[in-house]
Amino acid sequence: MKWALIAWAALSLLALLVYGWDKAAARRNARRVPESRLLWLGFLGGAPGALLGMALFRHKTTRVGFWVVNWLGLAWQISVILKVM
Image 1 (cartoon, rainbow, N blue to C red):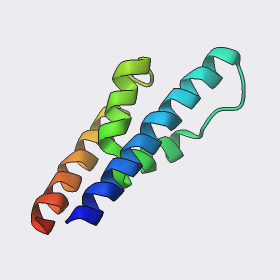
Image 2 (cartoon, one colour):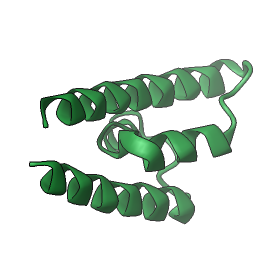
Image 3 (cartoon, helix red, strand yellow):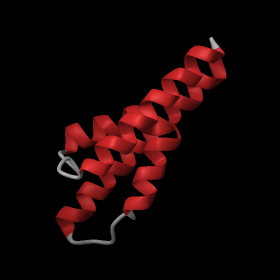
Image 4 (cartoon, one colour):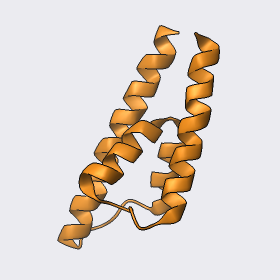
């Protein structure tokens, strides 16, 4: 169980940092993180960080697909964590 929580926390932190990086790049008109990468990162384990990044950085908040993918990701991630416990 401990490894699962550590991995989940690490992926969430990574997602938060990537969302922050992408928002900063958007402001600078610099090279951006592909949307598919942001979506996969949130869905495959980083949903808490992705959702927090969306809220903190006000990034991708008008994109319904980001909300749907990250909330679905969060749901399955929580179910996996609960099964491991």
